Length: 528
Image (cartoon, one colour):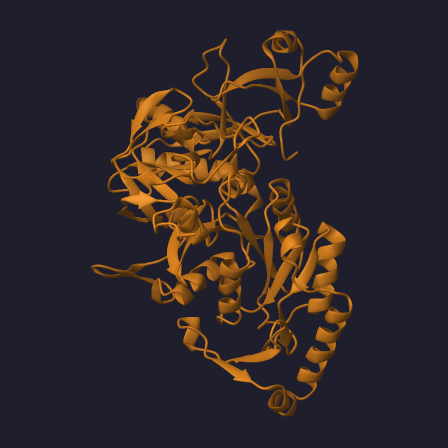
């Protein structure tokens, strides 16, 4: 059988790896992201990206508020080459308050890396993000980070993964030395011992020395003996990598290292290429799989404005699901049925972008100034398709937003609309009252802080946020909504996507209404 041409969709898709990194805040996710770029050759040293006009700063945390706070607030996309593959790395916020943004990004990923702090192990946010991955049936690689610092026993963390999130770890690398006295790792697949040496501030790749077992036993002494005993124990319990159970999300290949010092980073990046699945057929809203060879299709999983403050533009991030994308092609915007031109298509590297001419399944493209595109929208060429919508989270906090200076009302309205489209917050309005002060709904308080900061600094509209008495929400229908409007302790508002939400002051009152009116529509949203 003749080999397929190099432009064949399947061949190109097989070269792609599209994955997200998830973690609890401060577990080292952003550091690991930058070190992947270092090992892939996308940066000459950590923090500097190769560019045509010299060097420019490479950081996945591009937003000013992120750099002030030292945390990831918004997700970013980084595409780079490694071992003749194209890697699409989707960096996600670690903070619980931005779980909804993470959920949207995971909708575009084929696999995930879960980063754990070796001193802390499974934390509440880690557990929540893992459940999102499980719901989306994403294969997960696990990285025990910060092994250069004091921490817990790795065997204890392996047990914790199974006990707390029902995920069997299958270690690929195993440490020689205890946390805080990290010598290197044993690659359980080959039995090789890789010894690491530090570099100045971790700005360059860590020198790796392959050491045979006899020499390792002499030079590492008790640390080597202990590591070998633990590896033997793992062999006895059958904790070896199994591709079938990994792809099913039942087991997780585990790696040990320190992103700060670059220890173990290469092993993990190699695993992304060797173990993580390439893009496959995507299931549409009718449950049918759209093959890679079908005509172009993709869906919007993120919208971001003002990434370039000098231009105040708006970028829609599209995950390519099938076919070949060509810049300038006219596609159909599925929700409206209208044609959509793709002249301004770019690749994305944090806040930086370059014009691209083509993309393949698994790639992420940025469509600039795509004002009509919303999160969850499908785009297609030729044969129609609609991909499932990306669900919204159930809000837990509610505040009222008012512009401080009424002369800035126009900027306020424009900013509110834009930030709602991005998913920074959910914006709720009373269609019957015409209130110019909408209610903002979110998962965490920091969403409101980001909203206020961006509204003031990007749109020039300072805002006052005041608390409300509402504590939880349920989606409802028009008939039930009319009944609820005549009920005390409840307010019915409309979300920007048309969904009716009933806000309740008391969970006890909600429970009482559910008992008294079982025919009323009061549905939970996801991630409650």
